[in-house]
Length: 373
Image (cartoon, rainbow, N blue to C red):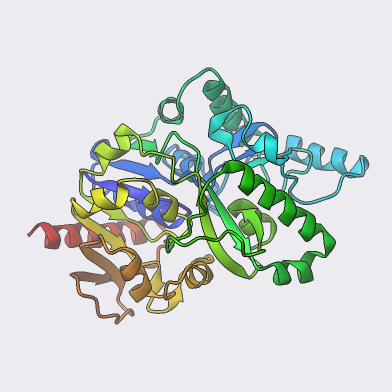
């Protein structure tokens, strides 16, 4: 007790202060893996690594990404070589056949390293190399994550949401992308649609609709967020592979404990996990407290408002409550007057440091007590 559902930076920030309230030895974190990408042959798991690095005391907290003080010589040299070789800039997806060939855990999210659109530090890259090498040796992502957690001396249990691949894909309006990127977009769209057809999966967005046949450009979430800076008109969000992926036995066990859903993006940070078979049902059977990432209709950070709007949800605390129909209680900001049909604990939910995080974690504990009481 408890289990935190984590993605992005909202929940890791909450975890930074939660140790004062919840015993880390009895705390489990289930992290989103829908953001994972294979870049230049190594598997990058951003949401696992944010928790891994922060609890390991090495996270670059200015960016909440990567290792503090890391060097980037390999990344810079790759970029320099590609420039001198005349290679086009921007994300370079491997072709449709390569997306589903070889290592199963990397399906539908494979990029060439010829143009790294994500900045990977040298020490950071060593983590990804070890992760990928252990996967190649036949270990599961859960087993590899446990090995890395031991290496970073984590004081809590960190679990990937699944050992199966799920890729968060953004469907962007073709007209919007055409204006921004010209003819290159049409090629990318054709390539993405071919990969989609080859996968044989149903497109699942946050409202369980079908995004196929829209004529939109399809891109991985990391291209949307890192390369495009979220500057696209989002038409839908798809969790490719979610229909076939399964939560692990360890995740199922963790979901039997009281659950805290941190103030992460409800669509792309929590959506992939919630799309897995049986997860929503499990959450309805256990006490759940959720922290809103909004203050009424104002989001604290990130693209949650645009993504919720694109998936048919009101971008507000009320919309989060509708999306989290399994939640028994909410933690809201003191300035958030949203009336909900469930218990509410209010506090200042902005988290600029660990003391702020401890305050919000204490509110989560109070909300759990209200549910249990």
